[in-house]
Image (cartoon, rainbow, N blue to C red):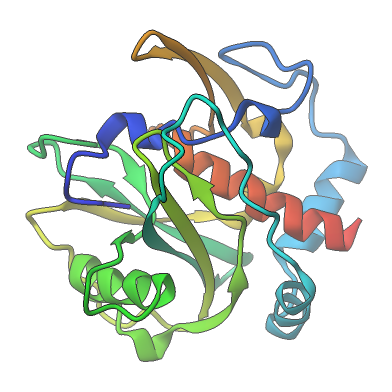
Length: 241
C-alpha cells in the first residue's frame, strides 16, 4: 500500500500487540516441522474452489477496529488495499508488489496494491481498485470482489480496509516504475502455514511496537502486509478447520 504522504515504514507497523500469537518469541517463527496432517490441511485450504471462497467471505464479519491508546485517537484517514487471490497451478496464489528503492518512504517494502482514499473515490474499495490499475495495470474488471478482511489502523492514523478479490487471469501487468519495482505471486499455502510467520518487536518514536513478518524466497514481508496475510490465513483456516 502506498499512501503517498509519508506513512512509510511506521505505517507498516500497524499491527496491534493483542493480535499477536501468545508465546511467540520476538524475531522467531514457531518451532516444529509441518506434520502430515498440518500439510494436508494447508494443501486443502489453498485449493478451495472459487465458490467455497465466495461462501466463506460472504459469511465472514470483519472484526471491529481495535483501540490503541498509543495511536492518535482523531478520526483516521481512510485507505484501501486489494488482496488479490490468483488462480493457478497447485492452488491459489497471492499477488504482491515490491516498492521501488528510490522512494522516500516505504522504499523496497512488500505491499498489496492500494493507497489512501482520494476525494473522487466513493469508498476504500474503489480506492484499492483504482490504485491497482495505476500501480500494476490490473484492470478492475478482472477482479471479482468477494469480501473484506479486518480493518487496520496505522500508527500514522490511517484506517486501511483490505478487500479480497478473485482473479482467474490477471492479463498483462505493468509496474508503474515510479512506485513499483517488482510484481510477484506467492502460493497461498505459504501463508496458511503458521510456521512461516515470525514476530518482531521494534521501537518506533520511543514506543515498543510488535509486528509480524513472513519471509518468502528472499522477500521480507512484514508489518501491515504480513498482518493482513495472517488475517487472511485465519479466516480461511477457521472456516476449514
